[in-house]
Length: 533
Image (cartoon, rainbow, N blue to C red; front, side, top):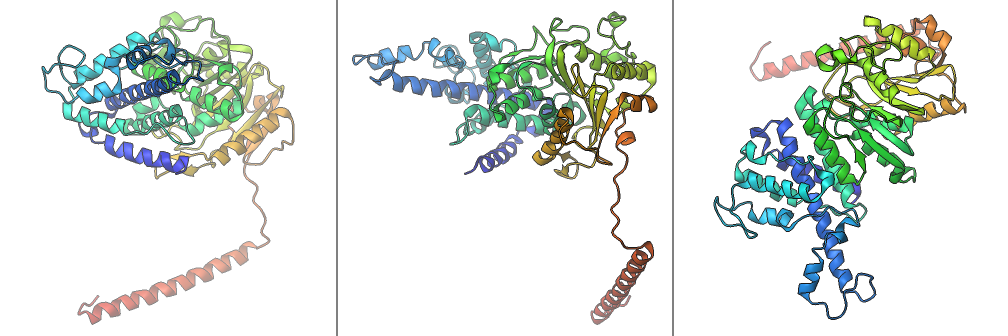
């Protein structure tokens, strides 16, 4: 079975079965229930895989781990509980009472029943909470990451037990895929499905792959510090990892910094990184980037983000932000956080750093609260490298038109900005949502990089245009791509308007005649049945 077939089959199976719980739980809650258990299953499976490998190595005379001919089962079992064997391979240490088999074997016990490792059974939710607590305690990297409120949710024991059985059936092995890649796919799939189920609220932690992949391919984060001050579930970091792997780079060449104000989403992101084996720094705690910056001294090589659109005063502004050092290009209006985010990201960018972010289309043209002056100052500072107008329906949860900004502190095309109109690019996934194909992303990024390098780039009417700062000034520094790219040139097919109208009129006449013929036929058929129209 191919990778694609394997994953599609896995997706269908998981989502169908998981929906057993959805009638009784809100999607916003349910995602944490499911994803927490999926993570525990992966951690436990990775531990057991390492354990099996060690057992084989301990008895192999040609292996460095060979324990000797006189090593009995008791000695081997004791050695298998040495955590150093696991941590040296970046495998999370899982104590016996937190292993998946122990959890699954005991989750259907009756209240008050004795537990094999001591204590008594106090319910399925409590057992899972204890499991999470133990894993966190033994692995400082996971501190405050795992969800430990299963008991509070008061989910029926049988449903939790059934959910465990379902997750236990996830095959974290495939002949061409590593377990972390399978789990990573499952994790991403659930994030996307839950984002759709949650509607607008779900979009706060999930950015569509089309947008993430396009930005990453444009920015090309090969090595250095990667920062996302509104990271959600960490989609940009995952895509950066994939980009590096696809281009034969080393994931160890990037260091990941993020920030997220929502505590549950902060945990989702941390689990996402832990699954992938990506070293990360998400600050000491969940916190807002403007008022409690977790990385004040960071100057990143790449800033990638999809911050919340059009935040009002209550959502982002604080009196302490008046006169903030980040407002180099002008103080953003209290009633809209868009240019607050832009300047926060520029503040955290190194002298050669690049920013790729998603903003609402209003950011391209608004003059409210001095935003036009901020935009003008950014353009005159020659920081704006590219603007991409995105199609509608890329986001499952909002219809607000969006665009991509690429800002660069060390542009190769000095004094110029590339405008890309991608509003007609992409295909419909279903009736509601659009997406870019891999070919779409490749085409857009190839054009951008050709322009950036000065090789074989040409303006294309209706699609691409390289504008000077003087040209942008003539448009009062409004950045709507349509103003610059113009309209697609119509190809003259050599047929006159009169000839086209004659042909259309003839076709219409034929269609009307056929319609009349069919109408008469229907009437005759009804009369034969004894009905008259």
